[in-house]
Length: 308
Picture 1 (cartoon, helix red, strand yellow):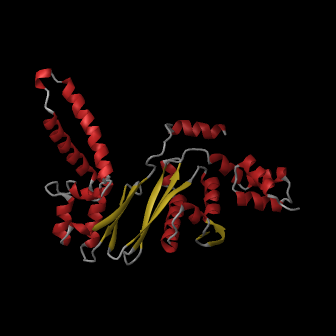
Picture 2 (cartoon, one colour):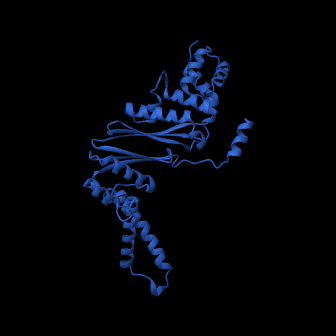
Picture 3 (cartoon, helix red, strand yellow):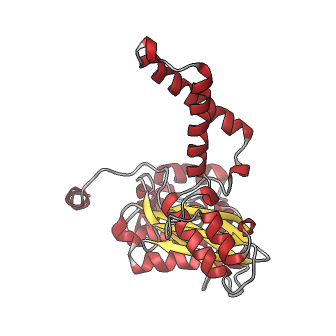
């Protein structure tokens, strides 16, 4: 029996399983939708699809750097609970994916999902992901990937066993470069800067921040007794002072160096490598950042599982 796109679509809507899984099962049962649903349930694929609606905001971030420190990969894979994020099977899965990203230099999650899974020539990454959802019993999601390349040295830092991972491109091949880069990566993990230096902040961003601070300062001024209110010139100076202070907190090189607050990051890097211009770029992934997290306790989760 010929399997049509409409049949595949219908089965996918009923079960939530992947398009390819639906097509393969329909071929296997000669187009019988009812049997196909049963087969998908037996294989755990329909069950996995049911779980895919759950919020996956925990998980693991992992990096992998080439032996010559010239290329690196970064990946975040989410799970529903931190408990599963420490599961050996899950950790191995994430490590395998990091290696695939590094080896292939793939740029998007969708492209990664379509690639063969290591050691499973007949399965794609997406198929193994679905299998792991069924086996582990939680929704899992490959959220994002990143690639870094350099002619200098790539340094990395992993915090909290994979809660935060940072890559830093250091435009230097000195023997100190990796150590300095790692220390800078620790700084980035801790203080989460948005820019490398003040020069990277756009005029548009500065203007917007200045407008916000001006409104704040004007409101504060209006709250003062009439005889103590500051003239516009003084307020303008206050705004510029606050603007510089705020922007410095967002800019890596202008931040106080966490290991020695008597230095800025720029001064530390310059002392070690001769120039602060060697920090070319960085990538920082934090597990679940920006995602809504479940507000449930473990006992409630176990109770729900027992009811299923």
